[in-house]
Amino acid sequence: MALTEALSETRQRAAARLERVAVPRRLRSRRAVEWWIAALFVCAGFWLYKDLWADLDHAYLVNGGQDQNMWEWFFTVTADATVNLRDPLFTELQNHPLGVNMMANTAMLGLGIPLTPVTLIFGASTTWAIVLTGGLSGTAFAWYRLLSRHLVLSRVAAVIGAALCAFAPPIVSHANAHPNFAVLFVFPLIAGVLIRLWRGEPPIRNGIVLGLLIAFQIFVGEEPLLFAATGFFVFGVVYALASPREARAAARPLGIGLLVAAALSLVLVAYPLWVQFFGPQSYTGIEHEAGNDAAAFVGYASDSLAGDRAGAATLSVNQTEENAFYGWPLVILAVFLAIWLWRMAVARAAAITALVAAVLSLGVTIVVDHEDTDITGPWKWVNELPLFESTLESRFALVCAPALGILLALATDRVSALVRSWSGAVPGVPIRLIWAGVLTMALLPIMPTPLDVADRRPVPRFFAEGDWRRYVDDGSVVVVPLPNAGDADALHWQNEAGSGFPLAEGYFVGPWGPDRIGVYGSPYRPTSALLGKVAAEGVVSEITDDQRREAREDMAYWRADVVVLPEREHESELVATLEALLGPSERAADVWVWDVRRLVP
Image (cartoon, rainbow, N blue to C red; front, side, top):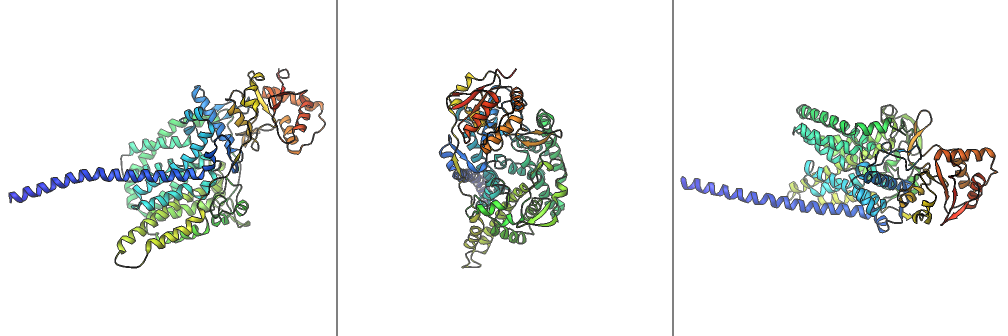
């Protein structure tokens, strides 16, 4: 008996030693696999932006309108404020002298501030490329970690689901111009904390982590946070109704954690939010209504393998707002998966979340294939809620991406389990091959293609070589035509000049009118409206004394030191108009200039 007990104890100690050795090996193996998966997602991000990375000095994401100029300006101004210890929440470098409320714009201070060294050393174009590429890749990897740790056993399933979460057509559409809708890695991290709270893990500690994540996301993108919060709420309610016993057990830790998170995040962002909503150049909201055409959900986006640019253009506001376009094979597959996996609470919650988001995105009146159905959508009532009135409702369809990614991951994991359980029982049935074919038919058509770039307009030597310094004291530079949402190259030129001068007017979101409604750019002054018309039409009108007086008043309003006209279309007409308004011009480097310091008191 003693010998038997001794042998048993020896075997137990040996097994324990083997387990201690095996666990680190498994961890190392898992980490190695995750490194490879992370590398895969990084390669996918680089492939999407390969033409941008090929020539950072000159490549411009052409389908994003003027947004690359604007975002690079945000990063440059943020870096300038950070290194010079100035307030990053407000700047007068644009829209001088009123300035720009950076918190009321999508400046992404949460990334712009830590990336200040990159911006200062390598330039804002590099920061722009890093944010976009790293944002998509990081989002995919964060979803992979969440799926593989909490929802599925199969790594392949987690990779497939995460890829759709991060690289779905609507997100790739925004990746042309809106990094705040491409950098979404915080949301799977938030979901992971909520899962831990649901499981009853320490609510105070997890609440603190959740509060820090929410505060950080506010400095990365507030509109996506609103969409995500709505999606989490719908998902959580459906899941709780499907698991009432678990919901009762989770209520206390989840409630405590959420209260801690709300309190902490509010403390951290209270002042920035005050600046955003009540500070200088704040606004009350942006009025726009643009719901998705229901047909867009089964269409193909411009930047997808089966993309139909002409068709997508008729179903969307522009190429950066193709907010649905999941393709009919994936939509059909999603309906099938929702039915197949309905008994799973997670799948049911994901399916209903996708449906609610899709319906909300249809807007106030539902339109099907360009035909107004006169059916009122639920957005009519949601739109009246605080914060929601300033959102673009069609963007709610982005919430469908992670919901569909979860469904795909769960289905692929279920297929893997079926293969293991049926091996030998049903010989000759290639289940994996069949499922791979199904996924290929659903996902290959919406696979993203590299985003289009074009050579950006050259920087005038007047700005690049520093000639502007001879004409600027402490006033603004008036670039003609004045920068706006349709032509914001002057923001890039200001960046290249080291942000050494402020610009009159510009491209940003600021208040307009007595109600302080948010608009893109400055309300036009008489002179900026006149010059914009000449630049567009190439017609010189007879200049009146009143217009000359208005020009002097506008120069005083802008506190202008110099007016600059670079080489452009209708250049001679603009020169004639400006000479009639301000007097003779002179050439400086490769531009026309009017030194107006003598006109400004």
